[in-house]
Length: 472
Image 1 (cartoon, rainbow, N blue to C red):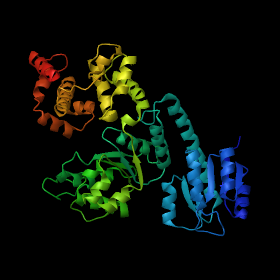
Image 2 (tube, one colour):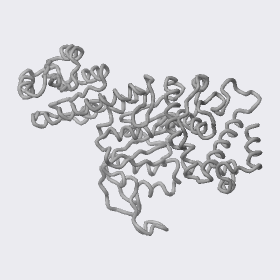
Image 3 (cartoon, rainbow, N blue to C red):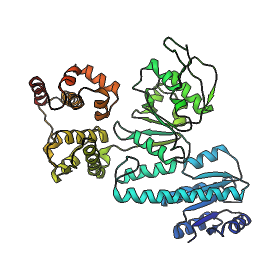
Image 4 (cartoon, rainbow, N blue to C red):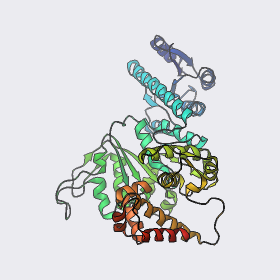
């Protein structure tokens, strides 16, 4: 059975010419105005639509094709819409891509090129349809993202709409909501997926080292620069560079990033030779960058360069339907990692998880489940196995102190489990090694004690310390 395509253009001779050229391979539907096009679209649901940007010959400035694009994608986000225009206007092209068009094609139409574009659009549509069917039915998510709520489904659709372009994306959301997973999903759905995905946490690298880390340096550029070094930008060539905690970037590096976004070139520290690179930039922040712009802590021009396509990931407390699917996903993941038989949740445990507000979001949930897998001896987790009381707050304990006590307890448990190996403990905690070292210093934890003890060999002194922490 032939695939359907819809051609929309106010010039009837163009419609007829394209219909003749394509009807051998496709079931070609045609329309000459917005109303007719929407009527056909609602009834036929064609996977690919080719529409002129301007559909009113009396008013060429009226961009009816944009209205069609928005309405069609609102009804079916998987539709691949190709916008055609006789006005080669970069601003219009950018607007079209921002609204989710599959591609933008300037007239005159070369039929052989258009045929290739249609075949590619159909292939992508079919692929995404299969993937959507898979993760919608299983609840297993997309490239590590898990959930069935309306808000997370909207995140999936956003990823599908922006992945195939090279446009910059600013991912906003509270700590622990999964911003890096979203960036990975965008990369994996893009045409760059076979090339590097490089992550830089702008808040975890000391300011003095960050410029060299990002842009590289030439031999002799500074004391200790014994060899030439490529930075993360060069390592991400042909791929994607994900700049996490972009709000922590200092002003001089904001300037260099803005310059790259404008001309796609960098210079290594100590060098004067421009290096042209093909890198897509994805950025994330848990800060209010707009407020930082108002306070002159973040450049306004860079903010709007990065925020071409913004996405805000909802906190876990606003997507309650996803808590239990996420918990089951993490149980399966960490039981496999720790070589344990699969553990399940009791109805009471599920109820307790649903009742909690999750200030640490998905990361907090994963850490809790990971801890339960390590410490519990049961095959079905009860509310007590979750390791924290959700029935009522303890008003006899200062909340600030209680949070610190729990944080210190989690750090000690991770160090004990991993015999004091910082990289493994940091991974279990879902934080960077730099952050873990900071917590170790903050709570005056002796790493050597955990290296001596290892799992299952805790001393009486260690038991007393843990019990004291729990008593507090």
